[in-house]
Image (cartoon, rainbow, N blue to C red):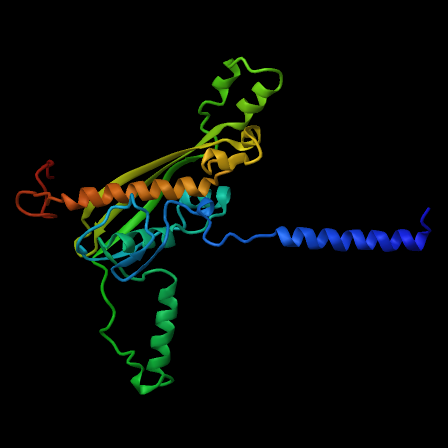
Length: 276
């Protein structure tokens, strides 16, 4: 038998060996496909890297665009409270730039930093060759505004129906309780900043089946055998819905036709009402 000192020594040796084994198994999968959303890759000017192959693209840009997200709306507060995902603006800006349909201009928080640099220049704190004079900022021809119309963590799907499948024992309830679908609906509107006229508007939607614990029923590979559908975050469905909305917006805008009002826009219209 081992005395207390020997037991302590072997216990320490065991924990050291276990730590070495588990540290050797650690692996950081940088650029993991399973962690990506529908918005993938990067963009620099008109060039893009590894963009989603399903993203609509334009041969030439249609103008400059600002993405304006109203964080004070009910949908945004519910979105943040339920998912803690933060603004949708960065995702949308990348999709827009990758598509080359519009040139993105800054109109969000980085504007504060731009104003700070200009204030330093006006105070004489910047070098003369810094060239932060007036008349250099590019105007936004259009504004694009996002909204989430609905996002459902569990839209039902085929989970309930699986109670009818003649599986043995608790396996049926495990399968039925583990499978549910996540759905999201989004909207994007495009407004001409000079006139205030809405140019186009589009909806987008996405649905994903979440297999949950059922992945463990398919052997050692678990959810990997199901193509990465296990434990998919609600945020991925929302990004996919925005990608769908943007694709629809681009398709509609490519075929844009002016709406014509006799007598001109904003001059009274054709629906006359009784005067006093």
